[in-house]
Length: 178
Image (tube, rainbow, N blue to C red):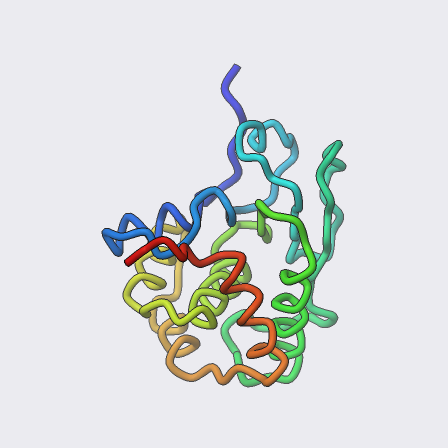
């Protein structure tokens, strides 16, 4: 029986590296997608941590840690100037310095909240907007290209985000690329 793969599931490193035609990110380190009911899709991925960006709990997966990093209040996923958004994102980046990798990051559809979180994580790591937008465009369903571009162009990282950047770069960037 085929595994039930979540909507918009992909290896972020593989997606970025394919577009860049070079190994910028470590592959099989960050996976992204939508909600799941059966965790069998994780077999073979080596996922050690699931980071949920939703307020509802995930199914328990034996041997895998689960971390819920949902915003404390309802927010528009693309209104990046709000204090709720900035607090949520800063908390996510900080939590990502403390978890075990590989990680599966998800929301309900795997494109809006997850898309923005992954895009800004990649921006924090100084990846080119073209690579980031290419990954975002792979999302199935209605996507908001102009809104995502505005987020990438206008978001200002906090000093806490910058502190997390160094550790996240060590964890996620492919240091072997020339």
